[in-house]
Image (cartoon, rainbow, N blue to C red; front, side, top):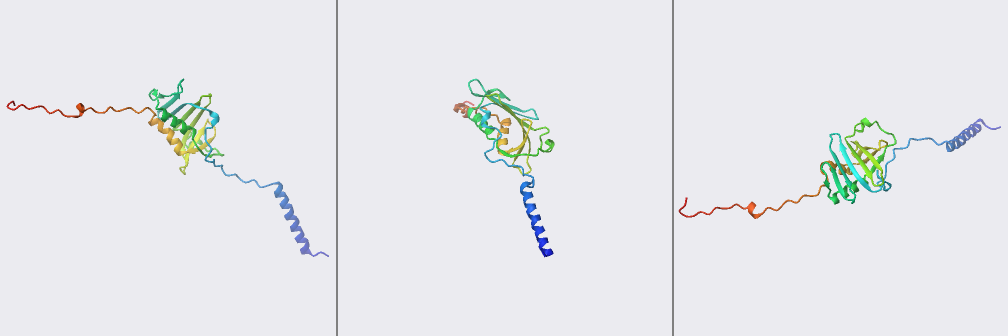
Length: 201
C-alpha cells in the first residue's frame, strides 16, 4: 500500500510539471522599458535628400530663413535678405542632418507638461525632392539630456541638447558674411601739430 506522503509528493510533482508547461506556452507579459535610441539614430535620414531650405521661428515673432537659389548658393531670406556665408550655411545644414535622437517615447506625455502645447521654437526643413518636416521644440528634459521635440505633429522624441542649441543660434546670429573693417589711415589717426613762427603770437 502506497503511503499518503508518497501520494502527496506525486501530486506536487504533477502540479510542478503542469505549471512548467503552462508557463512555456503562456509567458508572462512584462512591461517593456521605453527604448533608448543608439548614437547612430537621427531624426532626419538620408532618404530625405538634399536640404533646400531651413526656417526657424519663435513665439516672439523672430524668424530666420535660408534657402538654396537656382545656382545652389545659400541665400538668407530673413531677417534680412542677402548671400550667406557658404561655409557657415553648410555647417548649419550638417547640424540639421545630425539631430540625434536620444529617446523615442512610447507613451506620449501631455504636450502641456513638456512645453509642446505652444512650442517656443519651431523648425521647418524642406528638401529638394519636395519632402518637408516640422520640428517643434519643447522643454528640456529633467535630466538635461535633451529637448522634447514633436516631429510632424506626431511622435515626441528627446533630441540632443547640443544639436538643438546649435541650430537655434541661427535666430540670433544668422550666417551673414563677415564684413571687412577698413584699416585706419595715417592721416585719420595722427594729430597735426601747427607750425609756430617766432615773433607771431
